Length: 262
Image 1 (cartoon, rainbow, N blue to C red):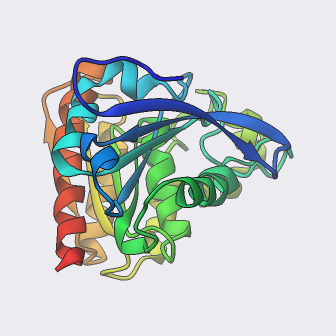
Image 2 (image 1 turned 30 degrees about the vertical axis):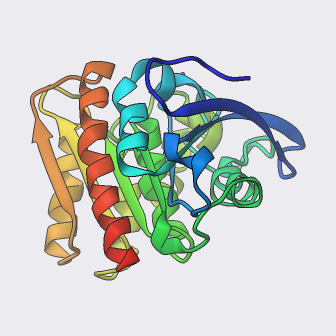
């Protein structure tokens, strides 16, 4: 079913079967206006929602995302990540397999149903809040499959918040599983990167409760001499910030994709 907007990008909702969870899961597909009149293949951004959100959040709340899909000729894919999956394959709940879903099952469907450039140099992950964590976490784990990751207001280290956002439901209580929690953060996984493994850009508003953990990740990557873009701008943890932020992150990805086209 299509969703009508005032610009040219074509927005559809599809059902993608997850074999790992034995159910169908909704996903939004945003095609640039040029898609219907060309025969070219396109780079793809898999864009993840935040905690308590769903697959439709980005297209309903961030009109600049749809404008950027048209402007930069990038296919946008917004999978549902359950409201609190944190994009993990949960070690305690076999019904939560959202690492597998986002990093394998969704791309398999997208690459078989749309004209995509089937190469990591043209495949990126992005997201906000829980999805910002998910984008970096999954891209680092699957850097052989994704070439770039962008995060906006990402929960890149959630260990300072052991009682928040239902994380214990997918990882177990923090008090009993501190090492497991740490190993599931983007902050921890950043230590496995070598410079050049991924194109990375992330940002956070100066009024955001995740500002401290994003600054810590920036410092860690800097000390490891991992090239990355990092920005802070005035803003809160809200859609006003994210609708603005997506413009910067889509430009970063456009430049990454263009560089790989040459």
